[in-house]
Each structure stands twice: as structure tokens, then as C-alpha cells.
Length: 255
Image 1 (cartoon, rainbow, N blue to C red):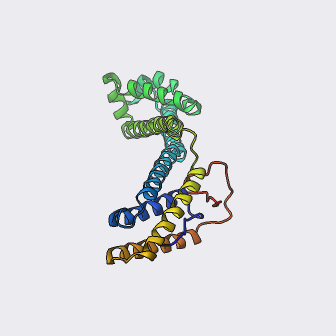
Image 2: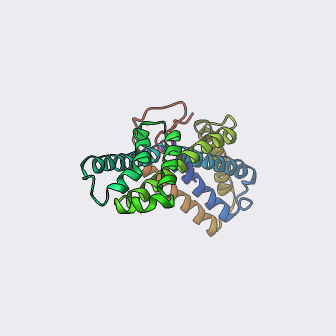
Image 3: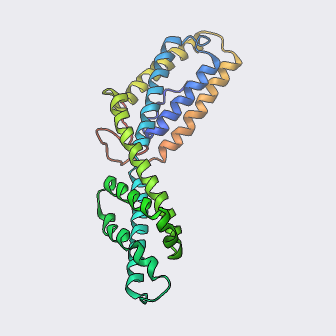
């Protein structure tokens, strides 16, 4: 069994590699290779790392929030300035003029909402959409060709709100779940637990007769390790070391 722990792998790849190795050992049976105690410690730490990585990924929603926010800003601006242009250039006696005037108070209230803080903006857009969705205003929205923009604005506003809520929940979950743990420290613990497990397992393989099933397990683990060695070789090695590495970005040096 190889002693390679994957020190240069990203957090996600590190967790996946050790999860795969653990699955190979479990399939054969910890008692068969006499590593019950060592495997229990190893599995527990790998499982915890996987959960922490998931929480980190859930927390990193900022790019999606920024895209949603930029999208709703664009639709809000387009709707506002489109209405302004209709109000400015449509003749007073034009058939659509009454619909323009009907929406004027609502659209005027939307001016520069796109510059407001995101949570406040979400609430203000929801208010705007409620008003535009009222029975008295629906016809005006349709007649002025704003229906598709209203639907898109609502979709992006809901997405932005949902992602902000998920990020807020993730922050709380990380604080509660981590209980002082850091991914960097946990990776070192996993490395130590894995070495202890492998040394014990290799000793058993040396002293006792090896079954075909165990031989296949060793072969499978060697294949997994080789695959992740290649992944690590292609991972940037000049990345900045942060106190708490960002998911899928930072490497962790072994002690």
C-alpha cells in the first residue's frame, strides 16, 4: 500500500482521494486486514473533511450572487429607462400613452434602486413586482411590452435572494460545525491517520498470506494514488498559502 497522502492536492481532491481509498479498504473488510481501529479513526477524519469542504463550497456563492445581482440591475435599468423614453417621446394622444402614465409612479420609485444595498434592493424589487402584478397594472405591462422583462427580473431577484440566504446559512453552519477545526489542520490529521493505517496494513500483508481480494484492493488503491499523483502534478504549486485555504485552490504542506 502506498504511503502517498496527496499533500499537493486541493481540498476537494484530497477528500475524494481518501474517500476512495477508504471505500476500497471497507469493501475488503477492515477485520480482514486487521486495521479496525486505525480505519475507524481515518474514516471519521475523512468524513469530517468532506463535510467541511461541502460547507466551504456552499459558502462560496459570491460569484453567482454577483451575476444574479448584475442581471437584475440590468433589467431594472432597462425597464426604467425604456419607460422614461416612452414618456418623453410618445405623443400625448398616442394610444399607449395612458398605459405609460399609469406606470409612471411605480417606475419613478424604481429610480436608482439598482444602486442600493443588495438585501434592501431585493425587498424593493419585490415591492415593484407586486405592484406591476396587480390586476390594474397587468394590462399596462403587457401593452408596453414589459412582460418578459418583468418575468426575468423576478427570476433573477429570487435567485439572488435565495443565494444570499444560502450563504448566510452556510456562515452559521460553518461556525457551528467546525467547532474550531480548520481544513489545514484536519488534512494533517488525516495524513497521520492514513500513514498509521498503511504501516499496520503493510505489516499484516508482509506477515500473513494475501488473498486475491486483498491483492486487488492494494492494486485498486495504487491506481487511485497514481491518478491523484498526476492530478497533483498538474496543480499549481506556486499558490499562496493562506491561514485557511480556500476550497479547490490551496495546497497544504505535510508536517
